[in-house]
Length: 287
Image (tube, rainbow, N blue to C red; front, side):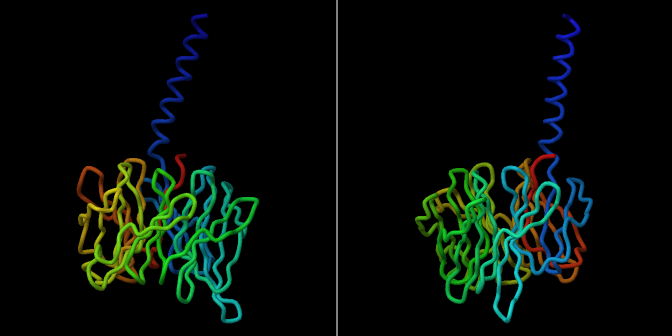
């Protein structure tokens, strides 16, 4: 009896110990201009997750570990956005194509549905892909759409570069302006979006290389502050499980960086000398 009790205690401690390790064991995934997705371990070791892609942009994991990536190519001089799915064994399949569209940000909701920003000539369309069902139009934004991100309540946020605005969509697709052009310095526009654990929205802005910023907005959009400045074309943003913010910085080309801003304050270069400009970031599920 004592042996059984001791065994159960050790098993419980083992599970707790493994969970403590796995809570921090998230790898970082980065799309680049040269058709490669890089994978980084928590200590910064780089490997190639996928190659041979055509202009990959946004990427996001669903709740069971599949990685979705927005890819772009031309067919008969017509731009086509393609959504790819990498399963947990790294096998890739095509989820769907959209003609006359170029894909940017990708996000997934709690149910495993995939949302993709598709840029058109005048407006940008957000497509919703439901596994096993198909594609539908979830919403649209004026001008050129970029990043997407969900808050904890299931609302989807979309960055629009054309009118320099961020739009908020409720789960039913009703659109509202979260922040408008007055929130951004003249000549700058929002690109990447990411929420921290407290519900604040972090936004990378582009427009003045060397003086680009990351802005922080409170959940209601009324409070705005500058989180970081002096950046060079920051693109994708992603938080790890510890609340550290990672930023893809596109220039100076061709040796771009991934920056890490610590939750406790301060920053460092997490990865440097990338052979191609990084675009969007996402963290994989705990391992």
